[in-house]
Length: 192
Image 1: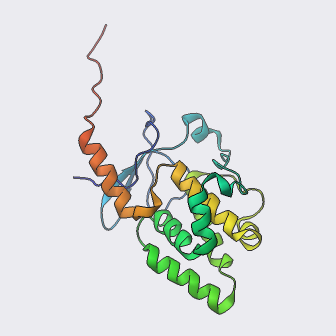
Image 2 (image 1 turned 135 degrees about the horizontal axis):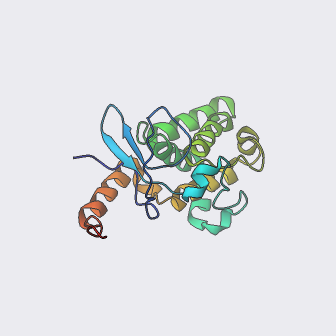
Image 3 (image 1 turned 135 degrees about the vertical axis):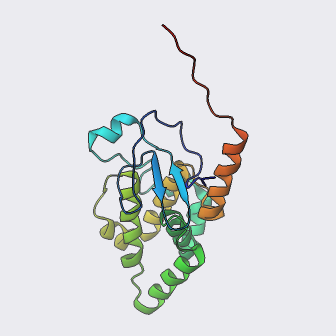
């Protein structure tokens, strides 16, 4: 049986698109085949967005940190945890929250420039959900507004249905439970 690779999303689109694990871009229905499991990802944008070839805006602004006070506080006091949670979801469980957070902290302590590491995850997230690069480049956003950028990415993942506190595998298990309790939709019979 196939494992779902993403948590519950907005209602699925009727069109079927394919995406390989190496492709980054449009968030569409997919059959992702990786070395560990096969899974499907549900889209999170309207079908008109998928065909327009223009990036979609972020679900919240860069400076909307106080919209989610808990993630704002977490990011202010422990940005390594926020980054680790984001990285685990963006990497689809291939790296754990702890490893990503520890590497972020190590880079911060050694170089003082953890933003050079975290900006790549912002780019990856933008690629996965085809988000616009705003208000400026990913590296500039992370270099000058590190905490705001992490908060925005955290809120974006929540907006797409992820519970970042349970990690990638927890979200996969949650999706399995939901899929098991919801019967498949039955389409109407033949009509003339």
